[in-house]
Length: 294
Ligand code: SF4
Image 1: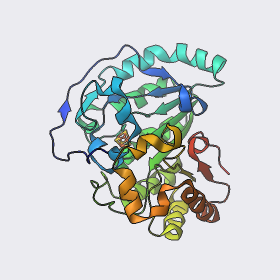
Image 2 (image 1 turned 90 degrees about the vertical axis):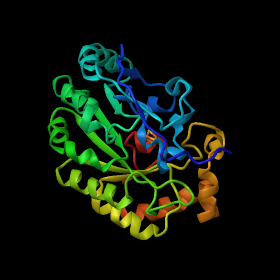
Image 3 (image 1 turned 30 degrees about the vertical axis):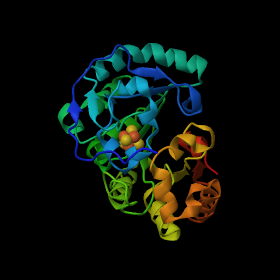
Image 4 (image 1 turned 60 degrees about the horizontal axis):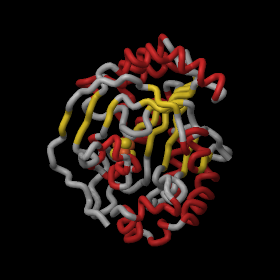
């Protein structure tokens, strides 16, 4: 078992350019989208709670020998490359995948604090106004997604748009792990703002962590979001029986709070509560990320 990530180590930031920005999806993402798009390589939230179990930390190609959470590479030409690739990838996706569906982002936070300085994601969103995908799924852990609300509203007029905001639990802390980068209540408030602007907004409880008050949590989600996705690390982390997550400190921290939360039956219990507050609007794991609810 590894130690919790260091929280105060310096973040190394170095911009880079890429030859391609639209990656044709494979593996579990294939049923969700035709392409993923990462405006950044690396993620400064890797040192916060979500980074402890983050699936991306196992991707050696992305890490290139660096610790997860220690580096950030804004892709300075992301928007220009998107504009260059979009028409060809749209033709391919409509032919081969039934639509040009972009997931932004599967391997980084699209709105890290450094987005204000580098604007890599915002530039891509602007480029999408000119070359819209058929479907855009914005996946974020950050309440600062609301800074781009007006741009997202304009994009919703050009393509089908869903904003997924990750809120793994109602708990402010999961000791002894690092705190989340933002409080759950702030992310839920961000969802409310987007939804009030007419943007389809989904709360992704991913990975599902022990919830202190499930009734109140899902009641609140039903007020601020159009749907909820429950994604347990078993079946959700891309490894048999959650083996990847079992190698991280997340498992012991979950078990210390609620030993039942590390079994898949916990997800089923939470699903039953969620379904009372969001009937027909509960998605499970990859089906939920794909927008298929029950
Ligand atoms: S924000 Fe997303 S990509 Fe970044 S560490 Fe958290 S889970 Fe991983």
